[in-house]
Length: 394
Image 1 (cartoon, rainbow, N blue to C red):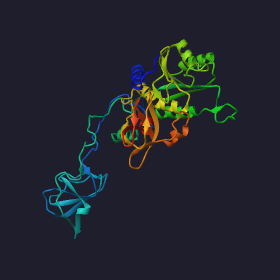
Image 2: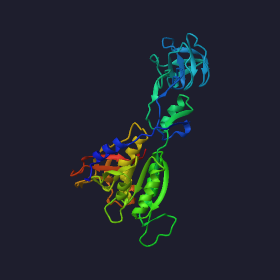
Image 3: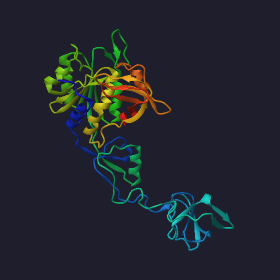
Image 4: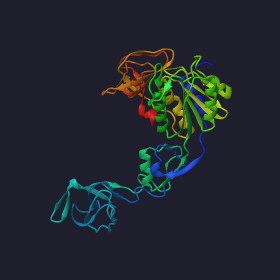
């Protein structure tokens, strides 16, 4: 099975994703990170009435420039119609009285013996937030498949929806392979390493609002791996492993998956992260991540994350990259390369001096990832594609 390019691998993964169909209605305040299962239609105008955009005086534009102040309108109060030839003292968010068609900001006015003097008459509609200018009654204000961020929570609340229809959470069974792995609460014996990948992957899955079935560590043994795969597929919508997908004698995941189901992908032409597997376990999709910590992290972000988002019915699955100028030089190899990078104050990209697949500290140092196409040479000042971590995590 020949290694696939990044685009070929993504096309395969997204075409095989099986969107969850179950829905539930949850409280708006608990919907952060969830995917909308239906279009949301507003039953009201937002704002529900014309209101003042600032503190000042509500007037009729074609009136006098020196007027008696006939009423005071605070936010939440119901005004009376504006008397002809007068002004109303008004505050931000307060309802515009009938008869007024503009608001003069208080900085442009002066009070003289109970009258307000307007320095410059405003245009019609000045400083008025019109009814329905944000959201109109009967309109779709958020579409099915939208991922709910804090700003969407606010928008949903602004139309008065206490409950939101969302897709159920994707259930992901996760396990790790390796005789060398121990948990951080255990003594570190000779030849052992702590299972840092568990914490990275659980964090990444939680950022995607997945329901995680943490199955722990499986030893480097074919029968144990086969048994774990069988256990995992019975409990989840997606089975994900980490480690054991390379070509060594102690790597049993490939053979175990092929015995239980089938593999559609094994190896991608990227660096780091070449040993990446994708297949099927009797109807349950399988993703096998490499064991090196940087490789596992980046392969998850660029391959597993889009697959999971598509499985969650998200409308947007792929991260956005941005072109920035390079403050480094690089000679690319035969594979697409992901470099851990930071951004300078003048918006140039520079890379970490250590790009090895086991250098976890470089991920903590970085602000994002630079993607270098195969065989491309980068010189100082060249444009490169940069993926900020906020695009890979949100």
